Image (cartoon, rainbow, N blue to C red; front, side, top):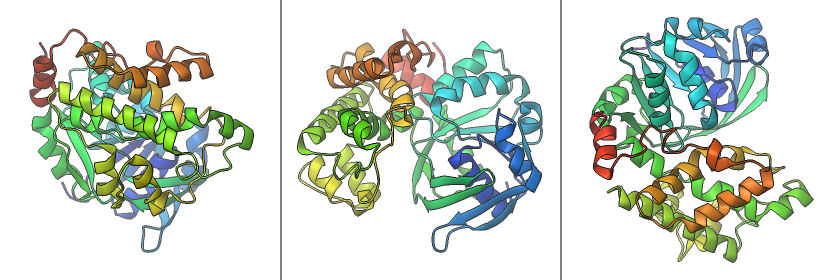
Length: 368
C-alpha cells in the first residue's frame, strides 16, 4: 500500500486528532469520525486540523478529506481504520461499525488496553458481521499528545517502537506491512494476549491514583504524580500488582515484561527496585497528578485493564488479591460495580476456554 492508502480515524479526542493530522501531513487521505457531531464541527468548518509539535516533529495545517459523525460515510472509502477512543467504548464502536465493514479492511485499536480486540471480535460475531476484516491492537498509543482547541492538536512525542498484534497473530505481518509507510514504529507484538498483558498503564495508573486519593482531592492534583506520588509504600503495592500481572501471563504461557524491564526498555531508567527506577526516570519529573479522581486512570484503566487481567488470573488459578483490592477501592470511590461493567471473560468471548483453546484462538483464529 502506498500513500493512497485511505485512513479513517475513529475518535476526535487528543489522540485521534493528533493521529488524523499527522497522517494527513504525511500525505494520506484521512477521514475523521466522532459520534458527537459538535466535536468535529469546527474541524469540518475549517477543513482540517492545526497541528503543533515538538522540535522537528510534524506541524502545520492538516487538510482532511472529511470529518463526520456518520459511520457509513466514515467507513465507505477506508482501507485502514484507526480506532482512537477510550477502550471502554470499543464495544460500542464495534456495534456501530459492524454493518458497514468490508472485506480487506484493517481495524487497529490504539491501544487495545487488555482484551480490546477480543471484545471487538466478539461484538462483530454477535452482530453477524461477515466481512473479512483484519483486527489488530497496539500495546500503547504511539503519540503523547494533547488537544489544544476544537480544531487544534499538539504532539509532545512519538514513541520509537510500539508492539502491535493482529487477531489471529498469523495476520500481524499483513498489518505491519500495510501500516509501515505511515508508521514504521510498529513492531510485531506476538499476540493480542502479549499486547494485553504487557499493559503497563494497568499497573501504574489506577493504584497510583487511588493510593493518592486524599492528596489529589485536597490539592486538585497539584503535585508531581510519579515523583511525589510514588513513595516507598506505594511502590511496594505497584510491585505486587506487577508480579500478579507477570504471573497471570505465565499461567497463559507468556513471558511478560516486568515493570522494571519496561522502564529500562522505554526510558533507560534503572534501579534496585521500582521506587528507585521510577525516580531515576527524568521524563516523570514535572508530570502533574490528575486534577480529580473522575479520571481515565480509574474510569478506563480499571474496567479495561485491571478487571480483564484479574479475571484471567481468577480463571487460570493465579492469586490476584492486590488487583482485587485496587478494583474494590475503585468500586467504592465511584459507587459503581467495575467488575460487572468491566471487560469480563464473557465480554472478551473466551469464558470457559482452556489455556490451549485461548492460545489457539489468538494465534490461529480457531474458536473451540
